[in-house]
Length: 59
Image 1 (spheres, rainbow, N blue to C red):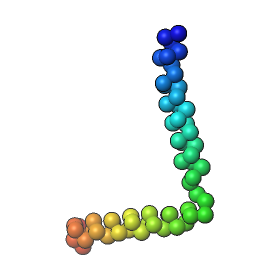
Image 2 (image 1 turned 90 degrees about the vertical axis):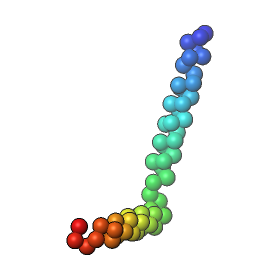
Image 3 (image 1 turned 120 degrees about the vertical axis):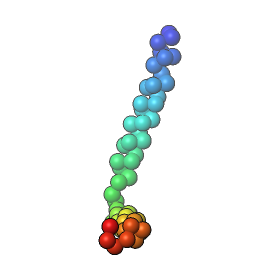
């Protein structure tokens, strides 16, 4: 029965990981997808603009 005790924790972790991945995949998209994408685009543009401002216009 030691093999059962050795196999249970990895199996529980595998099931939990699969459930996490499924939850993440299911939560992508939906009604707020456009708003989330716009926020990410704005943050990236802000970061890129700040990076260019630090380097200077001729860099």
